Amino acid sequence: METDALISKLNWFYSLELNQVDLYHAQYRAFQGTYSGLVFERLACVEQDHADNIAEKIKELGGKPTVLGDMISHIIGKLAGSAISMAGLDETLSMNILLEQKAMKDYKVLIEKLTQDNHQDQELLKILQHNFVDEHLHSEWSRTKIIAMKHSEFSLSNPG
Ligand SMILES: [Fe+2]
Ligand SMILES: [Fe+2]
Image (tube, rainbow, N blue to C red):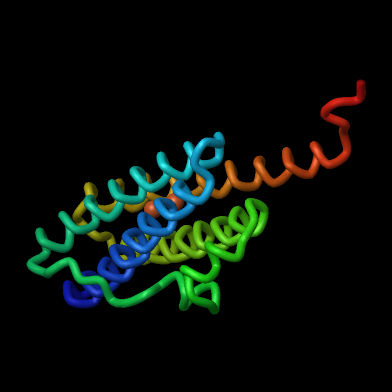
């Protein structure tokens, strides 16, 4: 893979990761005081780590970390801001799963391409693989939370 193509692909991830930092921050504020709010706060930190580790690699390759646009609106088909203010927790979690899975899909494509090319930078491959695993865990937590919410619909909290 040409260096320029790799830099622009990494900038795509850099943009998505930074968008997710903002999104999880907004969700943290919207659900503050709940366990989900605490999880969103933590996820914002993890996505910031992803943005940082990708930015480092872009610079190492001679590029400049650049936000290419609003990736989230592009992926979910509406403005991220409106998606947060309108959504309850279940819709929020579904949106998060969609975004995490899009990130996973694209990380997988790049990891496989670099592996196929016999790319020499093992550290980059490890960063991409670890980011993939984190996104996997994020989407699985959201899925578990949705299931837990559905179960609570079928039980009485104060049966007396
Ligand atoms: Fe991420
Ligand atoms: Fe994530």
